[in-house]
Image 1: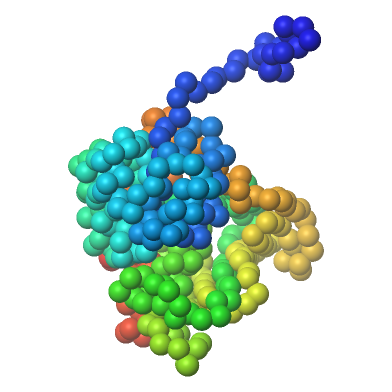
Image 2: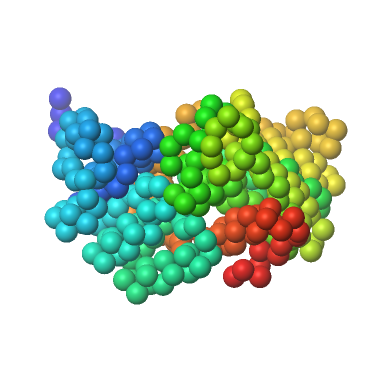
Length: 351
């Protein structure tokens, strides 16, 4: 084999190849499903970060993952932060524990990729934003759909359907027992399907349309009357804007099969977004154009890690930082206030 043939193809053709000298050192706190199926694979596939340490309160879970991953393990986040000289940490803990871990990381100057939600209330979100500012760390909330071309294509197609009139969004899945685990207790979860799985669809609505001017929410904790839990299993949220756009958001962790979609109706067509596909249709329902993407989620997880590393290095904008997520908590808190009062709430008044 010639010396030329041994070179990467890009170099043979004279293209500039930028190779990273070192990767950022990353840790993960919390080894639940989201970490194991999303964030750790994202780190392992990243060309910008390397996984060097993991942390979980369960010694059994920790030992199993240490064996699989071949990295250092800790049952205490503070001990990991003190020992490992991390550049960043992915935080995937129950919602009530997120603030403590973020504050510990900030105290060690470690940047944080925070599994949603950013916080459990607007007040907590503002306080955490100040913590991050004072410590001069970057924090980005994990919103993988912002790194998926299916979702980033939505505004381009929306520009082609005239004046938007109505938007309907749905995100449902079936959990056999909503009372199971920490997600069934509001003191640990901060709420149910709205603040947890619903955070992603709330993010999409705010990204595409901004914070609404009023909303009205109804919630249910009665899908399993034979179980005891106080976090909502289902929520129906009506929202509207002074521009005239209005819509609804259905969230449920009891209604199957798993479904996710946003449908925007304009006076010249419809944009219909699903988990792996986006289409533009006529008002009569005929498909005008369609885009689909297979196996998008692992790629989105890697893209998110790589983007955050570039945010840390000052090369990219933080698309989901503390200030951006204040609106998310205003929307979510307004839903809970509306459900309690059975009245419309203006989420902008909470900011």
